[in-house]
Length: 67
Image (cartoon, rainbow, N blue to C red):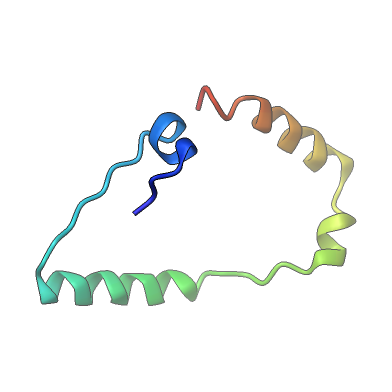
């Protein structure tokens, strides 16, 4: 559970607890499937990304409270 200020005030997060083993198993399977799409981030390559990526990230960061 996230009870920090950002989770409660900005992210509009909520918590749902489901006590069903089959649902839990399906969620775990989905998680492992999603991990298969994950790509490792090389810190050096991340630092060398194009300047346009930096500008887009900066602009998106300004919008975090709105999005």
